[in-house]
Length: 387
Image 1: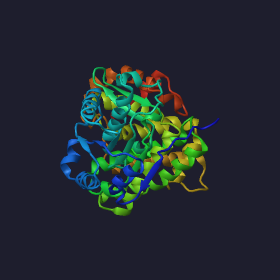
Image 2: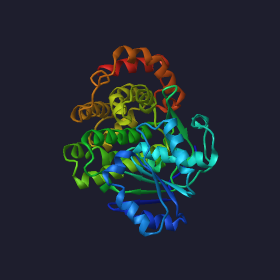
Image 3: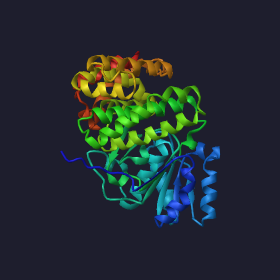
Image 4: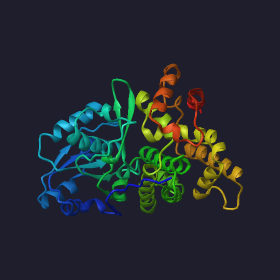
């Protein structure tokens, strides 16, 4: 198998990296950025230093703050309309996964037109849109280094997976200092999302030697630091490790794939508006336990990379420790079940057939080491309901 590897052209990683935006744009010959963020970040003041830097450098920047959690077709169309009001030569995504995915989608549609539904998988959009520069403020989706974005069709409550090189940022400024002080719930949810990226990239049927090394490195960074940033959001070394791990997790799955957890997670987010990382966390222990018999060695190596199994320990024992650790992590980080999160039980169970259909349509379950039937996915949805 030949692995098709794709990375951003430029990665600048470290405290203060975001302040290098004017220099980065100048080096790329870009001068009129359209900045995509959300209203909370704009009001927080986190964006202000970047805007001052751009103004001092003579860049003609405009800001769109209409990004919404789990970006929708309508929010993307609003961003596209705002972009067209100016003469912009690039798009800067500033924020968590939602602003970054929004920036990617807006930049692609600015060049190619059409509707987001035209670009959902199995379509692959490799022809580039406007250049995208990604500045993540969470650790995180890894979207700053991936060739995918997820946009919700609000008419069908479907999270549409869109893939191709068009969505890969040209550059990313990965500045862990932007994550200092983030709330504990957001920190936990985005952190478990990153860990899920790394685990699924490693056990995926599309894994390759390149993605394997990066996925294992991501696990080594994320696993020992998740509880630390939960306990102390101002822990700088732990925040830095989480940011690096999130970036590596994104690189790993973008060059391998995600699998069943993500496939089943997207419909939960679309129908019940559960944050993406949180819905992943709800599923991760159960899906891992169900999948592990088909890739025992791979899951055991995840346990060793995460530091929960010894190098000399047998694979079966290591997998048991992995599943126990994922369940313990959910307890320690106060991850609710769908039931305790307040989701209506009748609606959850009535939507299971549709959620299974949408999960299968995303293609992600087919990458799982153990490929589920519809009935097996339905069983897993019922299993995780009350934990």
